[in-house]
Amino acid sequence: MDKKTTTQQITWQTQAGKLATVSAWLDLSETVNLDGDIYERAICKLRCEIEIEGMGVVGTGEPQMLGAPVDQKGQHLVAKMGKVGLIAERVAQIEALIETVQQAPEWQKKIATEKANLAEVDEYEASQRRQPGWCPKCKSCCYGDCESN
Image (cartoon, rainbow, N blue to C red; front, side, top):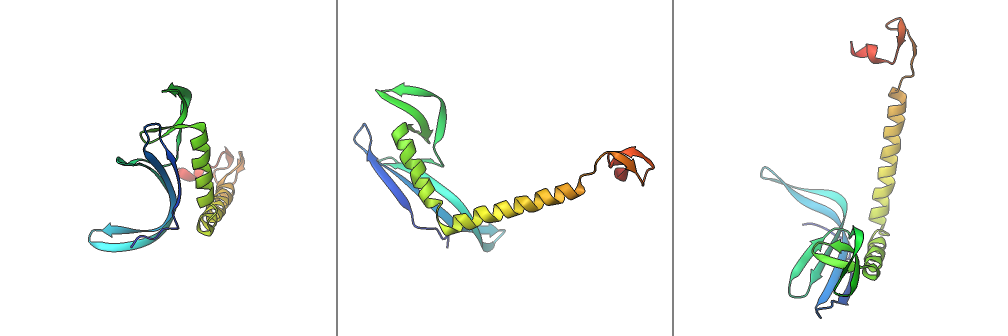
């Protein structure tokens, strides 16, 4: 069974009079079918979706900023989420909603783990990097590529 954090939501009335709801949550586990073996693994993924009354879910993911603002039906659209155009006020509300979800301890732990992993990778790459100079292996000036020969 997939686990998730408490869903956070915001709602507003569209110009057409329908109710729009944006929901955001963290998925904490997912079930994977490995050729018949069912495996549940721990994850921490941010999920976000927009639902329009009578239409169902019409977009997922975070709002995508448009290259240039678009004027449509008297509205100044600056982003989209799936099939829905968003004005700046709605984008700010959705971003605040996402930030609220990201305050969860599970998300903070994920970010700390990612930073530690990146630091470990940087340390390893620094230890493997060789500076040009005299090489005791090939008895010449090289960049460490003599090891591949």
